[in-house]
Length: 359
Ligand SMILES: Nc1ncnc2c1ncn2[C@@H]1O[C@H](COP(=O)(O)OP(=O)(O)OP(=O)(O)O)[C@@H](O)[C@H]1O
Image (tube, rainbow, N blue to C red; front, side, top):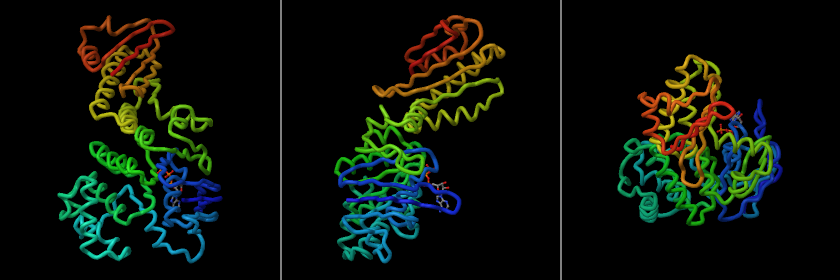
């Protein structure tokens, strides 16, 4: 369906990729992951010609869309795009936003576009908002309207550029649910996302972008469980665990807290799980262990998420003499709080102090 050959994009100061060669088939759901700045968004923008590739070729259904004189509006009709920032017209109602493309470009009658628009709004759960203006909607609702608007053009593929990055965490789930249902219906999609758990669940194929191209391309089980190449392995490992080594009692507490929040969001943890992890860090690491006047430094705090049941496992390694806070400080409020937040706790004094917790 889409064939990308020797694609290169160069900006004056940076070349995000210089040799992408890949075939995309109908019905594939491709998540694009990778470190920041590796050209994930640029690749999507080149596909629907929002950016002009520096060299190389993109062929869609046998037609070279990168050649001079290509019908750009026709390309954009085939490839719907959903952006981070919704891009709805604020002076038009929800249904008018959706009808605009079909009436102007597909030449549907207003009635046909209206009926089809309502049908699509029903599929994204927003038919009741048809006559509202975008400003009256939440971020998650706006993004669902943007998805309905893209679908109204009957595209062959939808390109999602970080569709949940601008949303409040409480709204991420509703947008991901809509994308999941589109995947079940067999729509071809490419999704740039930082929601790794979602990428794993929804995709048939994952592109890991790095080193100027698609560094590794494979099914989600390969990329997330046994990546074949080194950089993919390192990236996936970083994603799966949150880890900080604390070497001084004046460490940056806010940075750790924000890091836990970002990790939790990427792993689609609930806000409650994220809060509980932050509380455990504060009560056990900061109040209890660092409260012992530096003898526990350096201290390593790490968290991972179980793939079986979504529970969080936290591990704390710390220095100093053998000290089991669950016994020696059992009466302290901090320890009582930690026990209230965890399903299991274990301390070991072999080879240094080690606490493992299940939340
Ligand atoms: N219009 C532009 N002009 C100049 N440089 C650009 C432009 N757009 C993107 N870049 C640069 O190209 C590189 C790739 O950007 P891109 O947004 O595609 O990366 P990304 O992998 O999507 O990153 P992120 O995960 O942070 O969104 C970055 O270094 C970026 O600064």
